[in-house]
Image (tube, rainbow, N blue to C red; front, side, top):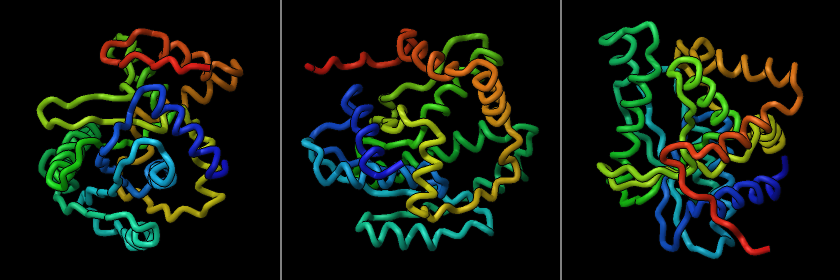
Length: 244
């Protein structure tokens, strides 16, 4: 996928759900993976010509793994003239030592989001952009169906009352395969996830299941995504109709 295509698909999602308003100050959560770095490129590109002016900055929550090297990402943000902040934490120790659990992902996500939200507020941001793509939304829906017995997935735009922050997901229309293509084409400085639970989570199970379903029923992923968009899921904003 070329940069122009990335900007087009990202802008469609932003316009469809009114994710960005004039004067927004947006924190991009950077994990070091392909998704968040692709989002960095997308919002950096859109900021140059989007009709509503907005600022971006990048924040990485360092969980405390020794092998987590962010130098290449620091250099990328410097080259793109994007303010970059690293929040040092002991989340890895808390999750894997002090509160060792069979499935640590939920606690880790809660602590990581808390640290990110706090830093974003400290920096004067009113929005946080997450790099969830179409496959993430589908996987979340499957996990919810299988393990919770409800039809649900996270929303394109969510207001966090307690923090007075709005979470947006501008990459919601992008398939993971397109993100992978973008990563290779532009040689993104992806930093390997040092988490010992990476690849053995319930989300990985949902990813594999989704891949198998679509392999046996071509087009199933797109039909499932349409069902999510039209499903009236609690908390989802109304999609904006644009004049043709």
